[in-house]
Image (cartoon, rainbow, N blue to C red; front, top):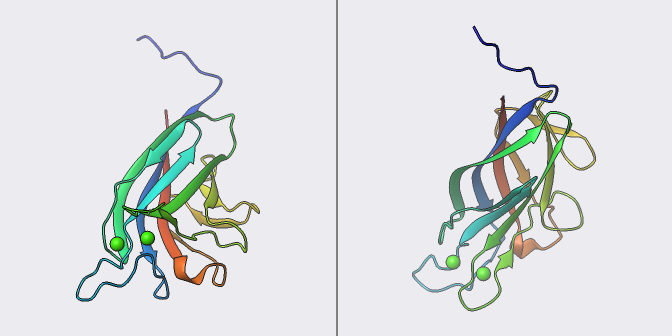
Length: 162
Ligand SMILES: [Ca+2]
Ligand SMILES: [Ca+2]
């Protein structure tokens, strides 16, 4: 039986599942139109990581957008933690898209997270553990930054050794 050659550096396939996004009740992404739900956000997300540049589908006029989209990334096990950025936007036809605040810190709107396949732990930028492999993690934007653009995002990580 031929044996597979041993590789010194393991490969991982990391999957980020973008689950959903929810606007804060105080948020106003679009002007109120009588008898319509057009004021509700038209959310889509941009996810960046190692060799990943992903744009999600768009969900029109929903306070909660269900994405359920998987984003795969291949990388070597030598890289201990992989950095991801997630940006949530509200699509606007006639003006520049609004950016939702999903950053739990006092500054900025994007969410940055790190995933560590060797342990399955998910960290924020201060290297505090915010969740683990396979579980849904929900992060909210910081209250008070831009009250009319606040939202939360739910996601989960998983990985497979190749
Ligand atoms: Ca808008
Ligand atoms: Ca809308």
